Length: 152
Image (cartoon, rainbow, N blue to C red; front, side, top):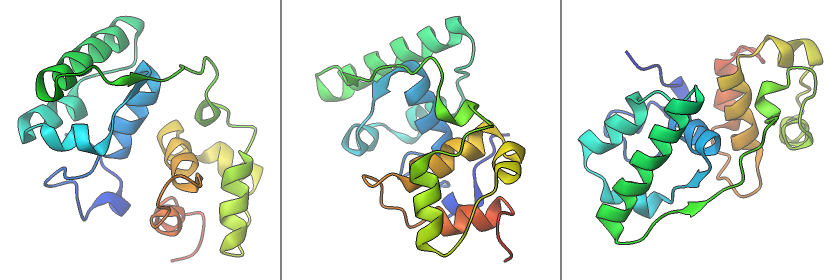
């Protein structure tokens, strides 16, 4: 059973948006997947991208190749590539990224180093993504609540 975040509940059944766990895999394998690409995929293809493992070097390569071929088949072009960070911020439990601190401050919240360290890498990844200026950010506060970083 795949675990989605509660703040994604409004779209995970239909997978009309790219869930965080797939976004994490995209950053891990170095592929930029646009929502327009995602929308070309049928539900089974979207589910396969959710379910496929992407942790070991071999899994990452397999995921990357599968995704590239899927985008090529559906759109006629390969997706853009992203640089792969060898030390991604979500794996660093000692340093809260500035974007996360700034986004928390917008809500008059402060995230402590102890709270950050207690989060899972998936949770840290979600907060980093949700705090970026290029992201819609509507789910930052719900994510903070879901991760027990503020009282509900």
